[in-house]
Length: 171
Image (cartoon, rainbow, N blue to C red; front, side):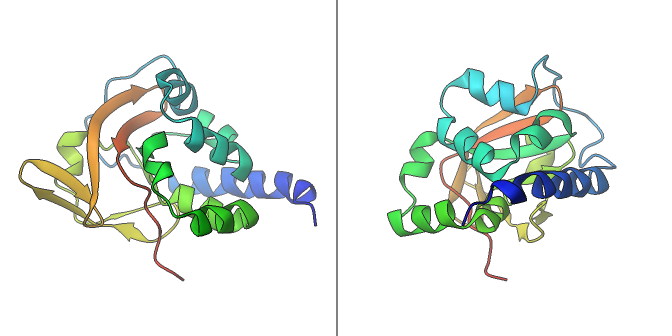
């Protein structure tokens, strides 16, 4: 069965969800503002082709291009290669599960690195919160996913690069 007929209602639902949840910033001090949005900034970086491909498949590119401010914990292509093939296959066949996983990497507001280290836990746009811990001078999400690069500015938010893919708890 094709998901084509469901794409527009899902995109409109996402846009409404993002508009409703984006309000007061997670950090009063915004990250440096760049000229390109989150999608264009990650595309220009070149190490997020899997993330962008999945965002297109889930119908999230439009919302991530215009809505903000948002903070994205962006898994690199290397991080996606670590995901077991069974999990990748499940996400490829279940658009809502993919949507939920991707939104589990997004937080409303501009949470710069200075602010992220003070958050315990932080609610994602998928609903469940992620935990943030600082150990040995490094920041970890949900125990083992490490933030490897911080404060990449975009016109509609901030991007932090992570070395793993976060999977939300089963609902």
